[in-house]
Image (tube, helix red, strand yellow):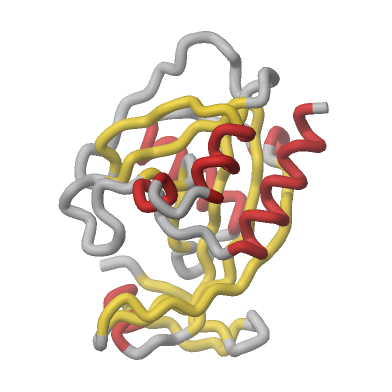
Length: 182
């Protein structure tokens, strides 16, 4: 059972710790992390969420994502999730902080996701991508140019194959990624 630290509406810890399922059931604010893996040729890694995922199954998503467990840091979570989901080892010194973003998404009557997402980027070698997928989480991975990803997200029909990205989130993340490519 994964335990999660509860946050207030401003992202500050309240001192309360609850199981992840209760956090979502009652819509408590909590912390998560996103890690965007990229190559020096302007491509990003996307993961295809497993068909068994309750939210957005079979849709392309950020390279790595995960809830920050109680007592864990955002960097520790990014490193742990990269290893668990993709079998990729990343170093904390290579993680580049992109920002922090708040979301509030009602998935179902009994599932509200209210997160403060700490976002990182990390460059990986441009060689063939070698991963070991955590099958219950990830069905596949792909490398896509950031320009193509942005174009597909702007197209209403093509965007359906992706987890919906908040426009402000996408703008902030993609602008920062573009600066890393230059």
